[in-house]
Image (cartoon, rainbow, N blue to C red):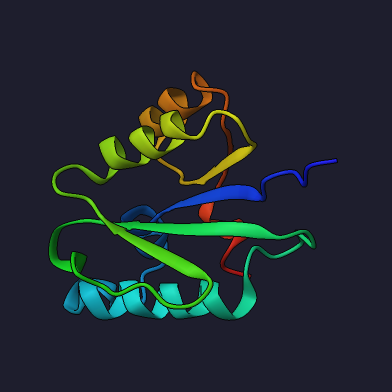
Length: 123
């Protein structure tokens, strides 16, 4: 029997970073790197099975490197558009998008992805 593909977790980096007023706007790239490192360390809280974590960054955070456990995707344009593309590419397995953006939530749920808010990552 073939193993099931791990849950694909796509993180809206700008939205998650922007959900906490901790000075992220002074260093957007650094804030994205801290989020990436936190994801690499803790994974998806409350989710014991293997997950594939993808952090989508845009703007000043483009170019943040991937690390073991977290693939970083630099959106060439809109981060939301890249997230939708990723959710649409992998419809053969469960997908979970982390964002509070209402329009993005609508777009990815139409593709069959589930959505949780940033607070699920930021305990």
